[in-house]
Length: 249
Ligand SMILES: [Zn+2]
Image (cartoon, rainbow, N blue to C red):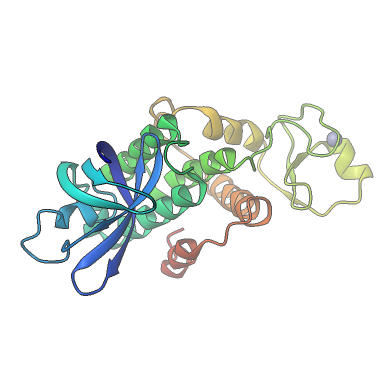
């Protein structure tokens, strides 16, 4: 069958000399498709195979991988490919979303819209890209079911919004009592981090306003979210190590 769908490229792999295989995030989930001849300079599909490009795709799909028949550009997001730091972040955001999104038709239109919003925010450069990264990581954890209620003690379940300790073994913050009685290795974090994390996890992108984080908060968020993504969501993040090597995570 042939159908039209909005979509954004979240992975693009050259195939042979002239083709490309793309993974699209659409409002109803991910779909992979072959774009034949897309690497030829004059190809009309060429623009539709670049990372973070958004458009309307006409796909022919029988079983398995689709075939891109036509592409109509909506947003090229050129700044995300022209600047090295933004490109590295965009690749990371794409990797995160591709590891958490469901295949079509089981995907989420909310996640699709949030992903467009996070990329637009990155391109605007009003916030530190690393801060936007933390928000996207927090939201991805929720999608993967690896985000606890951050304001609840991960051991006893009591409300502990002012907790200042994160337990790597329990994957969450722990209350003062549990940190004294339970034999847990935990790290000290700035007060208020549980409330901040809950807000980053749940508030829609457009409601988050401008982000102003102190250096200790930034460091703590990075530690907590990376631990949660690798230990509890089981992700091994290739593009995160690229960010780390550029020292801009
Ligand atoms: Zn407790």
